[in-house]
Amino acid sequence: MSKAWEIENFLTEKNNQLFVGGVSAVALAKEFGTPLFVFSEARIKQNIERLQRAGNFIDCALKVCYAAKANSNMAILRTVKDANCDLEVNSGGELWKALKVGFRGEQLIFNGTSKEVWEIENAIVAEVYAIQVDSLFELSLIDETARRLNKRARVSLRLVPEIETNTHSGLQTALLTSKFGMMPAEALTAFQTYKDSEFLDLCGVHLHIGSQNPASEPYSQALKTLFESLEKIYLETGLKLAHLNLGGGFPVNYLRDNSHEVEFPQAQREMFAADFEPADAIKNAWHSVKEAARVSNAENLLENLTLLIEPGRSVISDAGVCLTTVRNRKERPLKNEQLTVNNEPLKSSDLSLSAVNCPLSIDNWLLTDAGFNILLSMETYKWYYHLISAERAGAAHNFPYKLAGPLCDGGDVYFDIEGAARLPDYRLLPENVQPNEVLALLNCGAYSIAQMFQYNGRFLPSVVLVKASGEVELIRRRAGFENLITNDVW
Ligand SMILES: Cc1ncc(COP(=O)(O)O)c(C=O)c1O
Image 1 (cartoon, protein in one colour):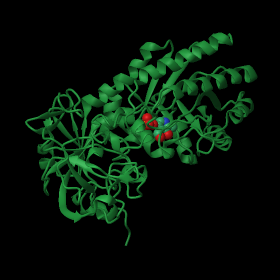
Image 2: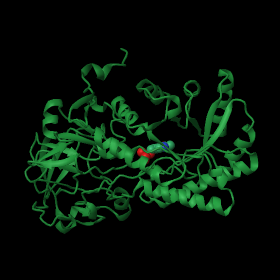
Image 3: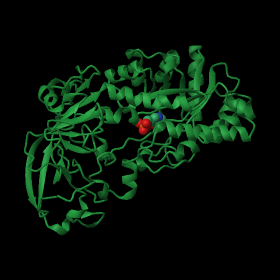
Image 4: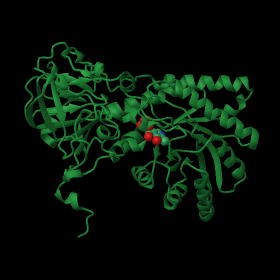
């Protein structure tokens, strides 16, 4: 493999074209139109196996619950289920989808900060593995609901332990300033209050330290925090917890091809290029907890314990590619000094390929059919998706273009208009890209089709799954005119 973005048996270049799971991306774009999301069944399964492997390094049971919020297309959920992976859901809607696709209650974790009574009812009736509780108020609601249904609800309390990671500020979830969970002291009160409840089975504690965490150490800190709670709860209430839930957040390397690396400020670069093995993080975290248990003579509290993880991005992100077509182009004269990187004037040496051969006094704009209506993170978190030409995947990508989507917003661009230099101003593609050329945005499987919307009357795109056999399955039909008005009443 000669291209940095290539992934063996999944994302490859052949005859100058991009292939996904052995299928030509250009042929798929022709058959299904663009924008088009293409997923690889083999890659999803490989990513799940990679996470499940962590179970080999710890001496307790590991329950991997794919976070459905990252992508809950029914065929993706089916693929996850077929890989013997359990599921985390975040609403009554996701719970309904999970049950419909065939997950059993004991395979499900039910999360969320604003649960309605009907959602709690459905989770209790489905006998989910645990409802993760966000506040003392919510716990009382679950108790009341379980009492009314005359059923016992398994619950686990979500803690907010003040653990900071170097991810994007909007993806931090374990700080006191975040909206999630309860303080460890509140959780202890909850366990004291409900320890003898007939209707609540208080079986675990949970936390989630954020998404795309660049370093693995916070996982050790997080698991130690969970263990400290478990120990305290045992000492103060006599309750022995059945599980600890370490959440998700394992990173994906969005800069596998690092041709734009130098243009990111260091913190962003480290976040986008994060690439540690989840199994190592889990192994280290488990060992630090075992050591803590040995020191406090509490090893018996680890017996028969189950460790849960809730990975989303690390399962589905790099298994999905978004194909987009250039629909328009234009040239704009620009003065050199207006082009900046890290607030400094741009020199061609700032673009990491030395052979940049475009006069920097002209901006070449390409307008695609993929905007933040289908990749919302490009707007909310200024997320970076590496871009290549699907038609000329083998050609030198050394010509800078300004890229933008189809929406009516000035912010629908592939760079950062606020000048915070979070994203490269230019994307490198082969020379002379013209309208109709098919491009590919890589690592687009997570938080993309799960968040898309039909802003500007744009049709939601088709999604296909390339099976391990090479067969292509249409897993979501492209929307049409009627879909634009499905729920309008007039
Ligand atoms: C509670 C919880 N668990 C798991 C996840 C999945 O995180 P990731 O996709 O980064 O693995 C999230 C994401 O926001 C979450 O909020």
